[in-house]
Amino acid sequence: MTEKKSSDDSSRTRALNRALRSFGTSLEHIPNLHQFSEALEKATSEALFLRKAAIHMAPDSSNGIAADHFKSGSIVFPLQGREKVHGAMEIRTSAENGAYSPEDLRLIASLTTFCAALLEHALNYSDQNRNLAILQYILDQLPLPVLACDENGRILIVNTRSATFLNLAKSRPGSLPLEMLPHLLKASDRNGAHDFSFFFTWTRQLVKANVSPCPEVPGRDKVYCLTMIDLTPERERVRQGLEREAFRCRWLEKPLTRVILENSNDPASLMEWLPLLRERLGNEERAGPWQIDSLALSFPETRKKEAMNDLRGWLSRGKTNGITIGVSEMDPGADRPESIAESPPDEVCPLHEFLRPAVLLHDDHPDVNDALEYVLSDHYRVRKSHRLETTLRLLQEESFDVFFTEMSLRENLSGVELAKEAEALNPGINLFLTGTSAELSPGITEQFKRPPTAIRKPFDIPALKKKLYTCLLASGTPPPLSADRDSDPGLS
Image 1: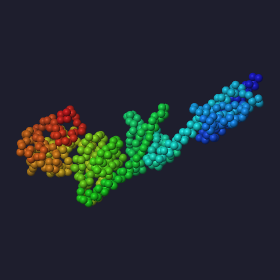
Image 2: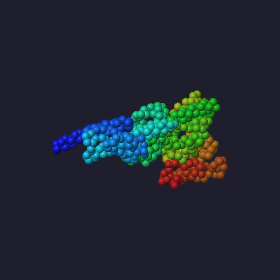
Image 3: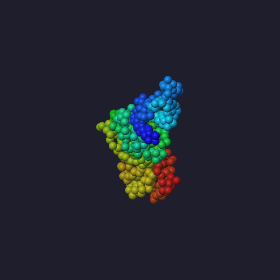
Image 4: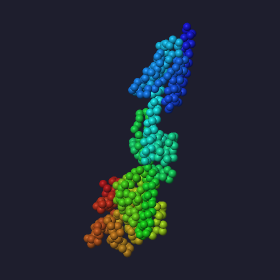
C-alpha cells in the first residue's frame, strides 16, 4: 500500500513538472489571447490525474459565468484577477469513481490561481499594447518630430516625423545618433535643471531640440521627451535676406554691416536674444540663426560705427559670458555684394570687451598714451594714437565714448581744435583735455556742446578714474560691465 502511494506521488510530481514546463511554454503566446488560453488548457491537462481542463473566458465579468458552459460532475474554479473575474476553469477527474481527494483539490486550486495570474498578465499585456498603439497614433498627429528616450539616449517611442527626420526605424529605433545627448541629460540632472534646449546639425540641417523630463515612476529609469524644430528654413531666410540687402545697398551705393554673435558654450541662451534683436531691427530677416552656435544680424545702409553704437545700447544689460562678436562691413562699391554672407569677420572680440566704454587716447608722447592705457584697460576698450592722421581716421571709422587729448599739441591742430573735430564726428562723446591746468577757461568751454573736462598732469589716477566714471553716468553711457571696486574708486 505504501509502495503504491509512493508510486502515485512520484507520478503526480512528474505530471506536475510537465504541467509547469507547459505553463512556461505557454508564455510565448501572450500576444494572442486565444492561443494563450488554449496553451493554458493544455498545460493543466498534463497532470495525469486530470482527464481534461477547459478555460472559458467571460464575455463580460459583470454578467458572471454562464452555467451552460459546464457539465454536471465537473469542478469549476473562478479565474479571479485583481479587479474582476476573467473566466472560469472546468476540470473533470480521470478517476473511475469521479471523486477528488483533498490533495487533488489543493493542487487544482493552486493551478487555477497560477492560471489566473498568467491570464491577468496576458490581459495587461494586451491593454498595454493597445494603449501604446493609441499613444503612437496621437504622437503621429503632431506637426513636430517628437520622441522619448532614457538617460542613455536609447529611444523608447518615436513618432513618424522623428523617424523620417532622423532616418530611424519606428519598430526598432535603437539609440539616438547624438553622442552629446547622454552627457547633456546627466549634466542637467546634476545642475537641477528641468527643461533645457540644445542645438545640433543633422544632414546639413540646423536643429533645435527642447528636452523635458517625463513624470518619474518609482523604481523605473528616467524618461525624457525631445521635441525637435528644424531651423534650416529660418537660417536660409536670414541668409537670403542678407544677400538681398547687400545687392540693394550696392545699387544705392550704401554700406552694409553684418554682425555674428557666437556662443559655443551655451547656444540656447544666445537664442533668447533673438526676439529683442528682431524687434530693434524691425525685420525678421535681419536677425536669425546662422550656425549651430551663432546668430547673424544685418544693418543695411549703416556703417560699422553706427551699427556698433546701436548694438552696444541693445546688449549692454544682457549676459555676455562666453559670447564673441564678429563684425564685417561691405563697402558701397563692392564688386561681389553677396560675398558678405560668406566672408569672415573683419574683427572679432569677446562681447563683454566690445560692450566696454570705448576710449581713444591722443598724445604727442607715446609714453603718456601707454600709461593711460595701462590704467584704463581693465575696464575700458582703449585705442591710442600719437599721430594726427591716425587719430582722425579712427574717429571717422569707429565709435568712441571718451576722447583724451593734450591741450598743447606739436602738430597743426591744437588740442581744442582736435577735440572739436572729435565732437563733430562722434556726437555725445565725452571729452578730456590734459595739460598743466585743472580748469578750463570759459572761452574754451563755450566752443563745445558739452563742456570738456580738464585733467591736470601729472595724473592723479584715482581722481581721473572718478571723473571719467562720473562723466559716463552723466552722459547716459553704460558704465563698465566688469568692474573691480577696489581698484577703481569711480565704481564704488
